[in-house]
Image (tube, rainbow, N blue to C red):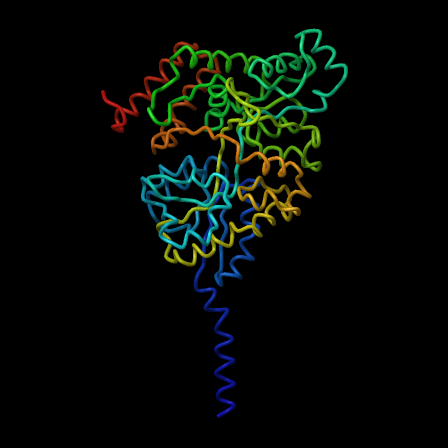
Length: 435
């Protein structure tokens, strides 16, 4: 009898690992430092939850603009967890591809510890867990900015001190000062590839002028207006002082040129700091500053900023949503956030306040302390929360027309009129505004 009981116990013990493998949680994401930081926790979390896991990392741009939308349409169940930006929430909710976090124990996510968790809300529910909080601004070369000879020359030319740009004009002056094409050095590099990347500079310049491309509440479009045309004129001017690689550069190529030391500045997101300060791959490591976009009505005490937030969301095609949620809780908790900063090659710009405040995380990136100190006072600029904004406006209308514009095939006036007309037609077709 005893022998039989022992044999039964052995059989049960041997069966446990196999049962754990019966559930596999598949995670889909783009490639990139912040996605790497998330996936780095997957093996540990799979063991804690008692599941197997698969991680699929696809090319940036393709993942969010073609691969995942296709999966959302065909609903083949490839992913239990999809890593997406908040700008895509309306699109994937409309496709009925996401599960709201309210379907589960949302308090297990400790939402009060997630900076700007409110931005993940759409139609009264929350759809992803913030993992990366990324701020749009200007990267610039601090070694050149702090060079005594450059400071003297700039003062003589412009009549004020060379310092981190606090206004649109200060930034333009710096681009002009450091633009030296005869020396193979350029005032800026931009993402000019006909894809979502080209929108970054256009969007940033709108904010620098103090206007939105379209108002988030009223949907009033500000493209073929005095301010909107001034934005395009500024964009044309910056491309005139840009690295020639700008006209075909996407995210990877633009960042690579900047970190190779070819350019003074880049209007982008602060995650590029992670690439730029890697001494093994960057020629300008340790010599990069970051300034939030200078806005005309900004206040030092309560600055405004444009935030790109990414995080994992639950797919409605998952056969194991409860286990997927458990995995989600583990992947995004404080310990995973700290490990994403400290135990990966390039780190992360985390969304959890507790991670920003963690001594281990700050030991690697002291600037996280600055974000932690100021994040609650930052007023976030938002964009229209409608499905068509991400899929049609930012996915087609803007890249297509801006690409034609920077290549010199259309004027400021023609481009402004075309973009505004196409956006207004999309808003009419969607029933958001009247004919």
